[in-house]
Image (cartoon, rainbow, N blue to C red; front, side):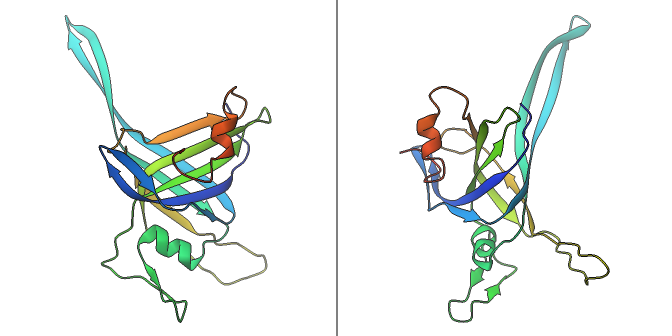
Length: 185
């Protein structure tokens, strides 16, 4: 189904992911969602037998996820990239030794039929990307924050994404708590 919008981009730190369960921290909204790109890397292979294709199989490795927003606070950058914000000076400090934590993402996109598609990506890490800033000339050109990350399946259940559409019967309970927690309680 075609989508015609994007809003309500949230993240939550993934606290634990073991064979017995996955837990997340508090969900936090990032202001001004512009774009989310999800690109799974899938390898297809064909087995040949009797001089013809006999069977096919595929395997998925990482999922590349790019997000672009109208703004990203220093606190959000620190939370997504493993940096720190000094509590006194409010200055972000990025070190080469910083390690980005695993997080989950949640967002929604309007479908062309007027209903809404809700999406959660369950386990990924972001890395710093190129930043471009330029002088203001005859016209204004906005430079918006972008992050790229790699997402994988969770250890707990092998899941990497959840989707629910508002026009599916029985989805109201899931949708009502979509941004209160990464996993329903």
